[in-house]
Each structure stands twice: as C-alpha cells, then as structure tokens.
Length: 489
Image 1 (cartoon, rainbow, N blue to C red):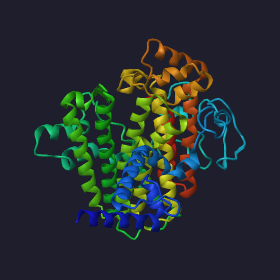
Image 2: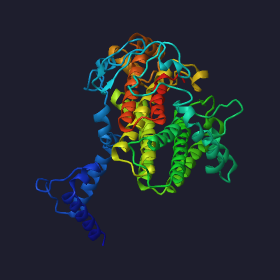
Image 3: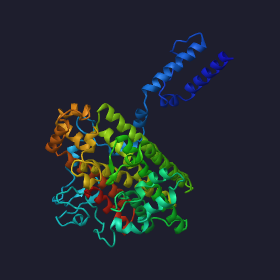
Image 4: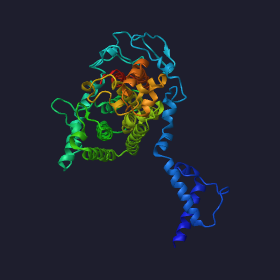
C-alpha cells in the first residue's frame, strides 16, 4: 500500500512539472527534464531523490529572494542607483537637479513637466511649522495655492475628520476583557498628561485628505454611494491604517530592543516582550475584522498586502543586520515594505472605497502614498543623525547603534571604502560609529538623503496634481508632501 501511494504521489508531482513548469520554478524546486535525466528503475528511490533535491533547493531559495522578485514595477520606476551598489542612474546627477532653498529656478523640469517657480527666502515653505533655517525643500508645482492655515493647511483641514481617531480606537475598537492586554493595546491611543504617546497621525490625515480631494475635484465623477456611507467607510479605513501602523511599532520595538517611543517607554518596556507582541497581534486582528466589515474585496486585498509587506520588510532588515551587508536598492525596498506600502495602499483604498473612480485616479492615489512613504522614511533616517532624543521621541543615532546602514551611511560609503568593513561588522568595534559620523559629514550624507527625499516628495505631488482638479484638499496634499521633507521630528 505504501509503495502504491508513493508511486501515486510521484506521478502527481511529475504531472505538475510537465503541465505547469512556472509553478515549479516559483516553488524554488528544479524543473526536471525527463528526456535528459537518467531514470531509476525503482520509483520509490526516484521519489526520495526528487523530494530530497526539492527540499534542498527550497531551503536555498529563501523567502527574501522570492520577495525581491515581486513588486518589480516599483523598482523599474523608482530605483535609485548608487556607484558601487547598483548599476543605475548617477545619483549625484539626479540629486543635483533638486534645488536648494536659495536657488532660483525659472525653467521647466523635464522630469516632472512642471514650470518651476523661483524659491525665495520668504517662500511659503517658511510658513511651515517647525521650519529651521537652511533646509532642503521639494519643488511645488505651479497652479497650487500658497499654504494658508485657514484654507489648505493639511492638518488644520483634516482636523474635523481625525482629531478623535485615537480616542475612537482606544475606546471602541480595541477593548478586551483581559486588563493587561487591554492596557497594552491602548498604550499609544491614550496619551499621558504631557500629551506624549500620540503620534503624528500622518496616515489617517492622508486617507481623509485623499477622500475629500476626490469629492472636491470637478474631474472626478460623483459617487453612486451616499455621501454619509462613503465618509463613514473612509473614516473607518483611517482608523484601520493607524491600528496597523501602531501594531508594527509594537513589533518593531521588541525586535530592535528600543527603549523609548514617542517620548515615553516603549510598550515592551512597560508590559514585557510577550505582552507587547500579543498586543501588536491583537491590533492586527482587530484591524482585520474592521477591514472585513467594509465589505470591499479590493480594499481587503490592498490592506492585507500591507501586513505581508510589513513582515517582509522586517525580515529584510534582520537579514541586513545579521550580515552587515546593505545596498541602496535593498535599503529602498525595505523602506517600501516597512513604511511606504501602508501609505500607498491606504491611499489607494480610500479611492476604491469612494466608488465610481477611474483607474488613473486610483493609481495616482497609490503613487502619492508610495512616494510620500519613501520620502518620510528617508527623512526619518536623516533626522536620526541630526535630532536629539527630546525632539525625536527616541534615542538619536539609534540606527547606527543597532548596526543598521541607512541612506546617509550608504552615500558616505561610496567615497569612503574604509567604511564598508565597519558596516559589515555592524559598527560594533570601538571607533566604528565615530568613523561613520566623520565620513557622513565629509560626504554630506545627510543632505544627500534629504535631497533624495525631496525627489520622492516631488513625484508624490506630480501624481496627485496630474490626476485631480484644483481644490483646497488637493493643494493640502501637496503641502503635506512639503512638510514631510521639511519636518524636524
């Protein structure tokens, strides 16, 4: 009987090889050429040999390698090459096209088809909250109204929609019967007396501004769904987005061994590793339930993909942290998975929830969120070298101390090969961090990182301006992109 079963399995596998060789390749196992392969008389031996080889090849073909093959469209479009890291465009040539704050420009930008206006010292960017002196700015396309706190400020304009999101999540969406899990799950949704613990809520703001901008735009057909229903669904999506983001913070801080988050002790320092992980899992479970109740299959697929990407990104970071090997392309891919995917897919989902929206508008919403996400993480990594623990809400130089090579380090390594061995040993030897800081300063690694962030912010603006007619909400999305680059914390 066992011999017959073995033969049946062998025949079934052989059929799959012949009928669907692409499936075999995707699984990481070899596609056998039966015309060339020597056959063994005993089918059980042939089966055993095949399964042994398949298992070995599956182990070699790791999850990371499979992940790298996907999302090729993202990298075809926005891959940034660095000498010594990937054979793509000259990064210095591209970065030089981003003007500094005091550089007047009065010529069309061939990459974005915008007419670039001169940026004067007293430009609209100086009105942004937290502006500090000599900063890199993304160019604002023509036709966008100047920043006005009462008209198109992104945080003021979205305030009626998002001001109570943390309270709603903490009070209505994540309650449990277990007191400790209840406290842990609500940890970042109930700010302390000093106001610490509450995040920037950039993701919910983006979701609601995208939603309102589509409602304002004259070139977007009116939804066939009742306005109250659309708003309620999009508001719930904003809450789901914040829940997924917060869950990722619980998990990240455990993996990284972080001590603080948002100016207060990290959740695992307060409740322990096990409870912090369970709280993150619980938030993801609650987010999934809320997501299913939206009754939109496309949105469920988008947001489920985000959770997969969060895991992929963390695995990529763990891989780099273990080997000490990092490159710009891998770094940007990790940033997309860990940060930009959530922003991109939540903006796309906001468009899908509205209904009656063209594919061009849906794609524009996705591209806006994607490039904002990449820019956001680049600035985060730059601020790690500039800010203080008080301004960042977490320790400065946290990435270097964790052995991570972020964009400023990768830029510095281009001109300082002596930095590569320190990167490989994750800056663990005495003097490694000081060497990295010296090389970053000499090569303007932080400034170049900010310029790269400005490029992505420009792409985000381009996507939304080209897809939607002018309105205060559309312009507020442009100003939000500016703030992402200009922020100091």
